[in-house]
Image (cartoon, rainbow, N blue to C red):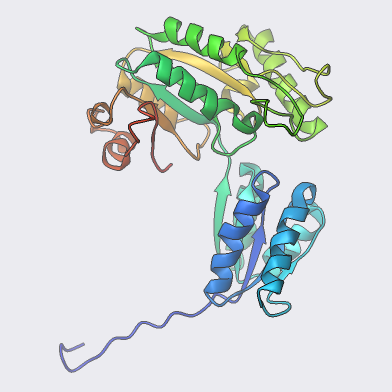
Length: 324
């Protein structure tokens, strides 16, 4: 190619049919975030929302039709993923999936055989690191929000916290106190802090993880039991220490209101432990100030990410998030 004598143009084309498989826990937001950009780029969409919260997607679909979206450009199909999921993957030119890591891995293998494109937003066992100079009160309050919002049923929920040994005991006490203040409830009056789990299967998973960790030597600092007196699927926000590698809670995503707290001696150790286990969609660090985040060791890829990407607001100095 010769300068001046040649010309380059970039033409953007729609992918074609975009298959969107959405979870139950953000039914309106993820429908809007995944479907609408695909439509705006000129694609057609086949969406399979989770059956538990399909009405939210159907409502947005109805609004789009009322606003003038051509018929059949966005189609919503309902059914179990195990029954219709493969058909959506096989027939789509691009697949957008939000869900569990095991399902995402299986789908990635299936899609790879077709050489089509995809994006996956998966779960993980998200870590939070509390540095020795952290404000313990603010870090504990932030951890309560990060761990127990939506009863922990979020792909961004923190499930393990690494705290410097110099402040570990005080942090655990403060976290336990804040956790005990949480109000459980299922009424629609906005007076409760944490609501119900979504299914019996999820309650069984949470209960088994906590019971298994306790049997392997862990200490339940607070919580640790179902609350059928409030509702059939309620489980107390739970904090544990001393969780060992033998426990399922140590390595598997719980997806419930449960967090385990670990002690560390130096930041390199904390980074290694936070980033070498189960994949995490949103790791977090807890320094006292943004400047403290920039002092993390530069020898770690995760530390570099923290120091260059962390821009926490002044109102939340405990929270520095970076891309996993």
